[in-house]
Length: 427
Image 1 (tube, helix red, strand yellow):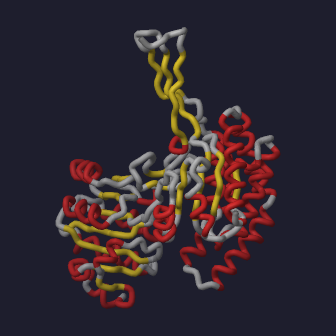
Image 2 (tube, rainbow, N blue to C red; image 1 turned 180 degrees about the vertical axis):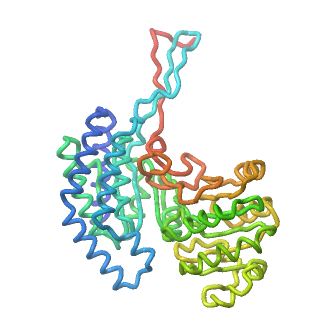
């Protein structure tokens, strides 16, 4: 048996044992552990930020994109937010043990449908070391053990964070193996986690398309995908154009390297000549590159010439691309139905939004778009577990089974049926 196989088997066995302990751990001890983990994170700030600085320096030397470096970078404010996230998760209601339904059959048997942990979660992710804290906190609160496999670019950061989290677990008297990090960057560990039938109850890959497709090809355990975020905004003819401008700018510019950033802007033909020059100038002055169709270019007028270095003709591929950068694809559409058709054809079923004052059009859009999250008069950036009130998220599922959208505590549980009798036998 190779060293990697032995490593993953050992992590799995330890996680399985920890999961059995967590399933019966009182809620108060879980919450105490989350607070202790937050304290240990802050106590280890110097070591964690030093490790992160080495990761960031290596990423720059390797020519990584600005978006990846932004996702990778920690500072005191971001680390404090990680600790605060753990504390907030500690204040949330406990999902485990919740009675979803109760009933009694005519024969006197009493049935209860009760929420229970999934068991052992395998979590594979890239770039963002703060996700290590989010995943650990959510899994612990939902009674699950977790095996974390971060990207090689963040290995030093993740190792330092995981060590602090383990110290917090130990301080609260819980098994350190409830949160484990795969300590090597070898890509074979991704395959081995996916092959860990009987150990891993759910595998969640969160990262680029290449990572997710690799996991899907090799996994033999259940997988929930966090796929591309090709998020679209449709500006209707009845839109408040000042509102639409603010929402488009926020969606594209605030943090372009994340999955809920805006990638496609669709504009009703009746307001294209009025709206597009305004939003385009704002986007262009923010350094955003525009990939436009012929109608959008015509509406831009002289702006397309003035900012010629930032305005290019859109290709079909542009409308299917998650740029994760200061780039946006723009298209003029005939009406709401055409916007829906475009999104359903080119999108990734992640997050879409409409800006309109027409309630009927809005409801048509909300019902017609088959995405995990659909918004009316709000930025795509709100597709986020924290913004939903979940405390954090372990990912945003674009699947339909067993979870969809931001995955919080409830999405990390299953249920079982408990039946209480008084000696009944079946005739």
